[in-house]
Image (cartoon, rainbow, N blue to C red; front, side, top):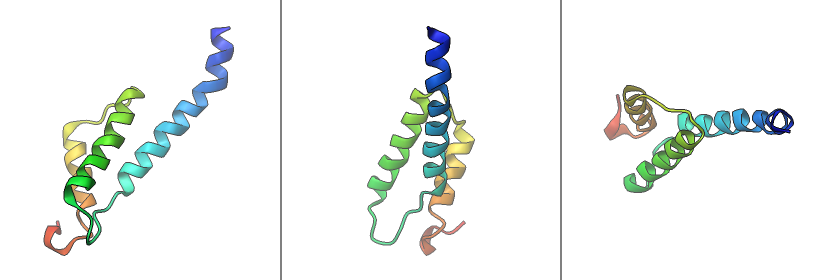
Length: 77
């Protein structure tokens, strides 16, 4: 029974991981968006990935955050 459930739903987990990770990677702080909201949205994606047993290292989180700011001239890298 567990094998059948795993076969049926395991692919969705991988798909969900890919979807959330892609959303996190593509995040950009746009003009007029609140920095606090931006950080909260990033944390939400990170927490979702963590619940799916997909941990991201701290250096990678820093890199993702800095890249998400690259659209803003005052935060350019």
